[in-house]
Length: 361
Ligand SMILES: [Zn+2]
Image 1 (spheres, rainbow, N blue to C red):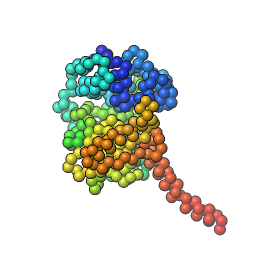
Image 2: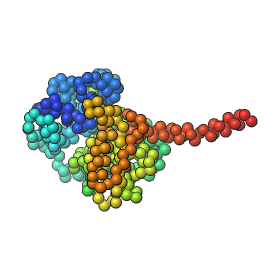
Image 3: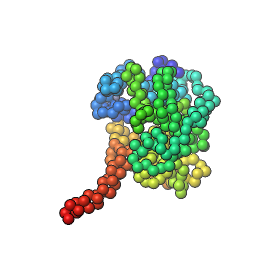
Image 4: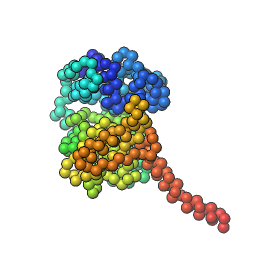
């Protein structure tokens, strides 16, 4: 597909950007929060050249940056440009076009990734990666994000040194988490990669020579359409599982609720989650991200995805239970920090009282 020649109407751009997780609140043309780097008013979507164009005053390491819609999608959805083009060829562009379409063009046929090549690439990456154990870089990273985490090492996660490719070049190597994304029928969908810092316990900050900040979380090649699948972090217990959007929120929800939890990578895939047959699952706990309300829809996107999933699962005969964090604009990883902080404060309280009593004696 030649991205340069692709023509989309303003409505189609908004539909496509929204589909890949850019909040509608960022696409109003007024200044607002940047879907890439946050803030309150630094980002404007102007579609100036009809390419889904945007500007952010901070996106270039604190300096201004402008980009087009494809770049925005790649950053927000954690995809490479190539992955995005393959997906667009694979039908998501057609969906965007159908929606409020002004031109009824089908996507042009283009070069597809060879499935056999993709399968071999993913399998060899998985085979070469190491199991994570209980005290390597990955568990240390997870415990830094979800303090007190006690879940045993997951069979769905491995660790490896990973090449970071950007614009067809390897720009460096970082250690990383490889997560196995499994489709409802058990096939491998993709391997999701989280790049970590080499010396500190944190997500890697990856910056190009031009100062462009690249996402630290990326899917590798997509072997099959991902809808329906999840990273199966833990085995179901008593016919119950939980599902969340991200790795950290899944572990945090697991710690808070004691439910074995899987994750779907983003809210679009969360809404599309399908319960696999043969595992005896009857109850699904949905751990929603409590995103800010999107003024255009009047809904919190994360909660909306959870409601959609619950509605479908109930229609299919499952018990679906929605959980959302108490505080708006937080997820369960945030809530777990608060919860744990309160528990620790509570556990310290008697000690302080004893000390005070001792002082009185
Ligand atoms: Zn920004």
